[in-house]
Image 1 (tube, rainbow over the protein chains, first blue to last red):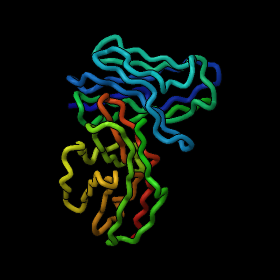
Image 2 (image 1 turned 180 degrees about the horizontal axis):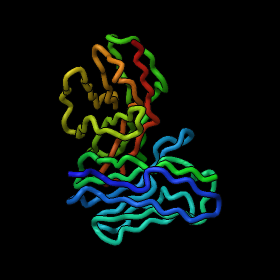
Image 3 (image 1 turned 135 degrees about the vertical axis):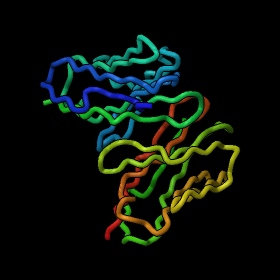
Amino acid sequence: DAGVIQSPRHEVTEMGQEVTLRCKPISGHNSLFWYRQTMMRGLELLIYFNNNVPIDDSGMPEDRFSAKMPNASFSTLKIQPSEPRDSAVYFCASCTGMVEQFFGPGTRLTVL
Amino acid sequence: AQKVTQAQTEISVVEKEDVTLDCVYETRDTTYYLFWYKQPPSGELVFLIRRNSFDEQNEISGRYSWNFQKSTSSFNFTITASQVVDSAVYFCALSEGANDMRFGAGTRLTVKP
C-alpha cells in the first residue's frame, strides 16, 4: 500500500493567493482528517470526514479555510485568501474504525 | 472535553540511558483510546502504539515499553538503552467515541552520543 499521499509536499505562495492542498487516503479507510502543525499551537485537528461526510469542522480557523471530500479517495483543503499566519505543515491522515490514524508526509506551506 | 498533557517539553539524555516520557489525560468517557506517535526530524508522524481503556496491560516492544494506569490517568512511554536514532518529538494522543484524536503538545527527546 502506498500510504496516505499528499501533494504538494512544499508550497510557497504570496499573501492573498488561493492555496489548495490535496490528499489521497489509504484505500479502504473510511475516515479522513486534516491537521495543522505549528510551533506555537502544536498539532491541531482542523476537520474530519467519515464516509466522505464532514463530521466535525470546529477546528477550521475561519471562513478562509474550506475542505471537501468528493469521493472516498480524494480530499482537498483550500485556503482563500491565504495569509502569512497560515504558514504551517498540513497533515492528512486516514483510518478505519477506532484504530490508529496513518499520516501522510505533510505539506509545508509558506505564505509570504 | 478530552485533554492530553505532556508536561515535559524537552528531554536530553546520553546514549544508553533509559528515559520515560510522561502523558496524563483527561476524559469523561469510559471508552477511549490512547496513542503514541513519533515525529523524527524528517517530519513524518509514525504510529507507535494504541491502547484501549479496557486494556491496562503494559506492553513491551523491543526497547520500548508503555505503562497505562487508569488510576492516575497516565500512559507513560519508556525507552530503554536510548539510541541517537530515538531523537524525535513524541506525541501522546487521546480519542474518545468519535474519531477525533487530540494530541498533546509533544516532548522533544534528544539523545546525545
